[in-house]
Length: 227
Image (cartoon, rainbow, N blue to C red; front, side):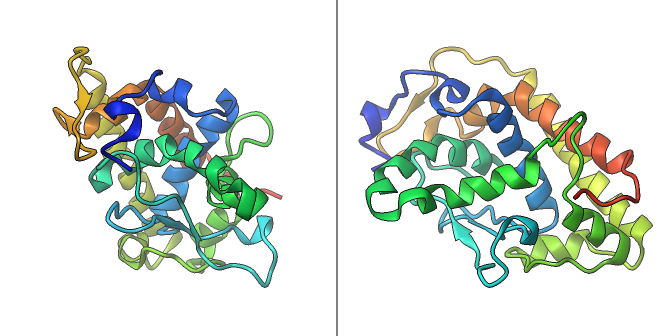
């Protein structure tokens, strides 16, 4: 599938290629940042990416991890997995005849993690609860990153999450200074020339905005959970 996809090209840039409104697109970006920093989404492109549903937006008896389309349309490394997941969104339409609305469930949860209810973005109450108590009311699918972000106190946990976001913002800032040349292309193997960060550069300004919103929400959070 990767090699033959539209003769290795897209007709639009990545943001225009994903058929969702801007507010949903931005929620996807914020949602990935939040879910990733608490270990509730995986980033291994060699297997289906999984996301843990938020308890507040799921049936209590159905908290099983949800899977995104696989294989992805573009071969990427973990640091560029998010734009590849977005690029794969249209594949869900092919599953609608058999899965109906469930075809979009993983993306729905990505949206829920990053959903802006009103005004400025605020972290989901489950994440606020984790920061306060150290207990997370859903099962992380990436135990390694969850362990790295954990800490014995709210201050430690907050510092770890802030550090994670700062590292990502620094990387995105560096990539934003790298202009696309027009010579980038998809190889027959599904990889991108010159490298997979091309996908990230395509939406770099939006990623910076989204990660900054999550950062601000974390730094300026109140003790009142989001309902």
